[in-house]
Image 1 (cartoon, rainbow, N blue to C red):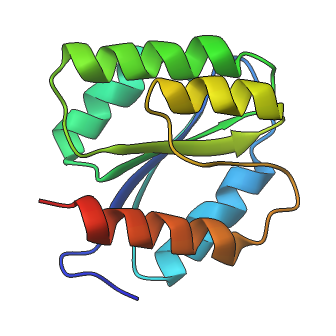
Image 2 (cartoon, one colour):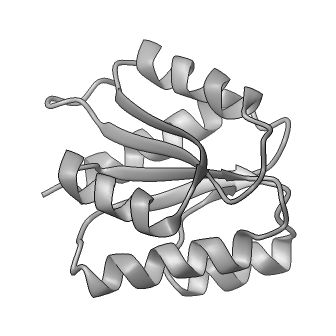
Length: 136
């Protein structure tokens, strides 16, 4: 399903984690599916991620976190989004995130989180459905 205008998805690797193979595979798959992908790369700060999301008019912020800092980083991103009065932006992502942490992050507004081995189509379908239902 391609939306018009295309979904603008900002993808980043916050923190010190240097493993970016997975997010690059996803970025290519999302681009092939017709999304407008903005890949910020490694070692991004929550501040830089939210700033670029605002500048680029992102529909989605997707973070890949394998370092174990997911609670801190997602919480900081959500607080910055709230402080910036940024609305209708899905914050999603993936990494090594225990179920109890995913549940806690969902309570502060983080969307679905995907672990290693999740089929690409599952995250793609989730993002497309969310944007279709929430884009204003």
